[in-house]
Image 1 (cartoon, one colour):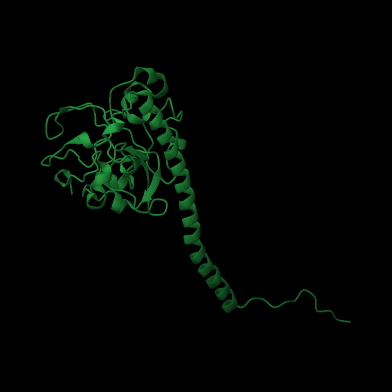
Image 2 (cartoon, one colour):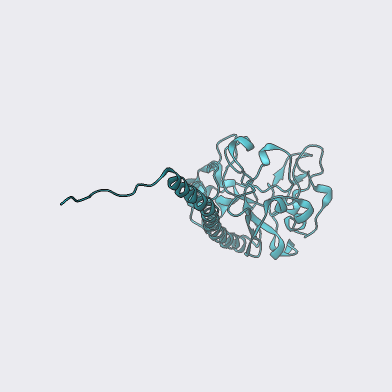
Length: 266
């Protein structure tokens, strides 16, 4: 008796091509879904970190005469061992006693941010994923009016015009007309090192679309939105093209809740 064992029908080339085509189509359909899910997860983590910074900022204000920290200066020698003496003058260092995660720790920053995370390395400022609304809608570009007094805290002394008008005082809570609509901290402007010409995002927020490479931002970061922390502690998300366009958002950068178009920089 003859047995026909071990024989079977093989796939034809056409069938293999059909299977490959189906797999390619499914992959094309699934990748955007997976990317969206990853972006949402990154955004949730980012909001959690912003929330912690918001609590720390509130504690700082309560402990310092109801006034916000300057974006830069003065130095705080009590933080020397924690962050190094050059870094004790930055807003994020001032929050360390209330939020004990160091700026240079990756856990401090948004997981959707792909730039450098470093403190001050003279002459370069710190870089990271978050930035502080120090000067409001104004920004010191030569040839443009500049008045930093509408932000939460410019440096306590700024040089001669056009980069400032002498000493400034810390902003108190009572000076913020609409805390629920004033921006405190957001994600920094950074796309990539090639586009920006620097390795990471600066730690001070800048309004204006600013047709200068240093201010390029990532329009696709976790779901095409930037997360924002407001002065009353609540958070929101906004398309960065809207956030950085003073035509749409200028009032929320300023303590008096006015747009001040005379200070806009294109």
